[in-house]
Length: 138
Picture (tube, one colour):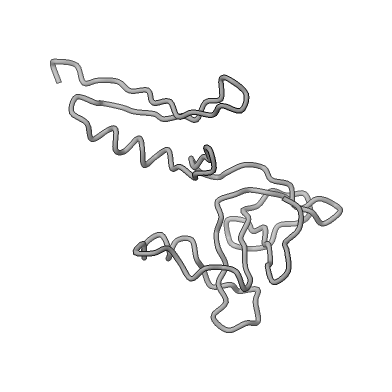
């Protein structure tokens, strides 16, 4: 990922929202002037992801909980390590696999679902859904 640009801060924090030491994985939080106030019409998601920035001296400063994992390298850059949830990015769109699974599970006769992002052909990432049906006896 590198280093933050002007007027932006990156924080790598543990599960207690405390900074992690050099080389230790943590969740990436972004603070600074460019952080939005929240999601439009999604107060629940806003409360979960846009938090008070305890590291800033600016009143009412916010930080964004990205869901991305990283670690500090000795040169101060941040190395991206993946996600801490089921979100994937396909063709520039962030997709929550769990939301698709939940929607599929509402279909009649569907018992279980799982959705994966597969890249069988390099550069051609696709969503694939697997499911089981209720047996006629259920």
